[in-house]
Image (cartoon, rainbow, N blue to C red; front, side):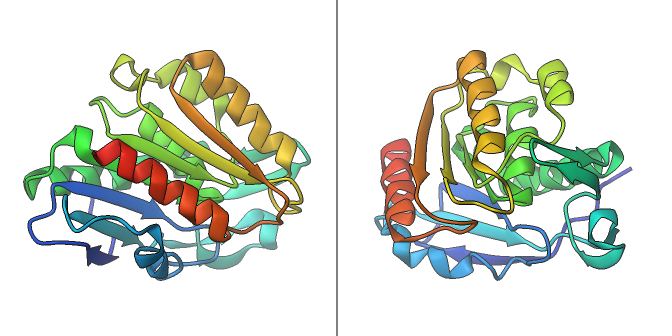
Length: 224
């Protein structure tokens, strides 16, 4: 059965883009949340990059009293160092991300020129979808996030993405996704052997200007 394509905001930095960045928003946000970051990344006109900011489906979220909101998966409950994610929801979102990757390939962008990025819950899906994708991807950006199902990722991580470069960052004052939770993901990635550029900042659950500049510099090196 074909997975329906998620609606998305799209921004192209130049004609005939040869790279794509699929950027996943956090819990309760939507695809518009990070669209304004594109000019701040200061990417060159060439190669052109297509940014795709999909909207997550609206679902009830158990840990938020069952309120319906855009979410990549349900969070059943959580404690300081664990988020009890709904595995079926994680897998469904992974299929939706794979459908977006496939569309970029159909539009002429090779899989190894596709970057999966995300913030918070979106970053959790960037880790999961990126590390378990069957084809080599261009890179993964994971911001203020964690591994939602570490055992699933460990079991299903692919050789194709064992050496895919990763940019990850986390705020040391984050009250939403505590820094130690992000550091556990960092350790897992380091043990796996992926090239990892890790940044920590004295900020809460957010992305701020020095972090944006570091992401832009990493993307420019990746796409050079």
